[in-house]
Length: 401
Length: 63
Image 1 (tube, rainbow over the protein chains, first blue to last red):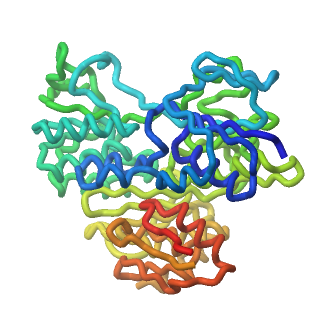
Image 2: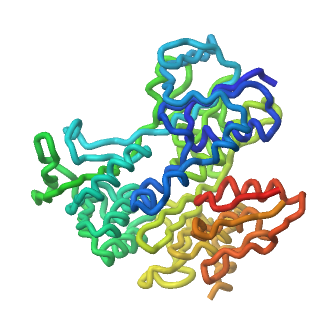
Image 3: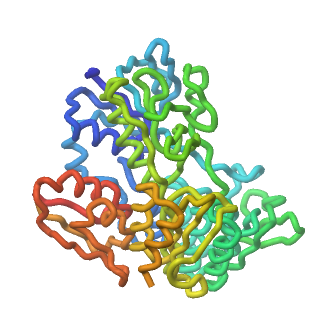
C-alpha cells in the first residue's frame, strides 16, 4: 500500500474518495486540495432550496466538522492545483511542486458563459456556493425580470425557484424542448408544459444573439430579433471539465481526463466525477457523466482503485441516474436513453404530470423516466442494473396499474 | 445501529430503497417508510451506502 494519496478537488467525488480510503483502512496521509474556501459542500441545493432561501447555510456541508476531523485529512482549502507531471510523479499546487504517491483527480467542471458578458453586472452562472449566494441576493434585492438561458438542470431549476419567489421568468432554449437532448422530443414537450403551467415564458428553438447593457445588464436580444428586458440573467448552457491544469501532464485529455474502465488514468493516478471520461463496459461506450450520484459512486470506485493492484481492479459499470426538482415535480431518469428510442408511458399520465415512462431500443430496455414516481423509477433501475429486456421490463410494469 | 431519517430533508428519491429494500421503502403515496429501524450488523455496509447516496443527505446512523 502506498504511503500517501493526494486528492485534487474537494467537492463530492473528492470528499467521498477521502472517506472511502479511510473506511477501507488506509492509514497514510490524505491531502484534500480544493480551490474554494469552503469545506466540502453539496451542490444540488444551490439551485433549489438554498437559492430559495429555504435551507440553512449549515445544511450545505457534506458532513459535520467533527466527522470531517475524524477522517484525519490534510485539508488544503483555497489551494489550486496548477500542474502535473506523471512521469516524475510531481503535482504542482499554487505553482509549488510536490511529490505524490497516489493521485485522485476530481476537479469537476466549470460553467460555460455567453460571449461578451465578462464583467457585466446582473449576469450569473451557477456552480458554486458563492455563485448561488449572488443570485439569491439579486432575487432578494428585487430582481423582477429574470431571463434564464438554457433549459437544462440549472436553467430549469433556477426558473422554478425564481417563479417561487414571485419573479417573472423567461427561459430561452436553443433546442426544441427542455431536456430534449436527454429525454427526446416527446418527453421534452412534457417538461415544457410543466414550465408553462407554472407561468414561465418559455421560448424554444431560439438562441441568444447578444446580451445588452454597458456596465449593468439591460436585456437579451434573441436570434429571432425579439428583445427581452432583464434585471437578472442566469446562464445555464453547460460546463467544461477542468483539465487546463493537466496540459502537458502526460495524461490523455479529451473533453475530460481519459481513464481505463477501472477509472485509472495513469499508474497510481485515478479520476472521478464530472472531469472523468471512461469506457463504461455496460454500454460499450466512452462516457463522462455529470450527475451527483456518479460523483459519489465514481469517487468511491476511483479511491478503491488506488488501493488495488491491477489484478484486483474491477470495471466501473454503473447505470447512470439523476433527479431534478422543478416546482412541485420530481423528475428522475435511470439509464441512458437515445433521443430516438421508443418511449412508452407505463404508469400514470403525462397530462397530470405524474407518470413513469420506459425507453427501449432493439428489444433492450434502455431507461426509465419518472415524474413524481420515485418508487417506480427505483424499481426500474433495479431492472436496468440486472440487464432486463424490453419485454421483461414491460411485463414488470404491467403490475403497477 | 439505529437508522435515523430526517423527514424535513427527505424528498423520497428512493435510492435508499434500491440499495436496502429490507430497511427502506418508498410506497405509492411517495413517502419513505423505515421498515427496520435497528438493522443487524450484516446490513451495515448497505445502510452506509444508502447514507452516502441519499441525494438529500437525509439518512444517518447512530451506533
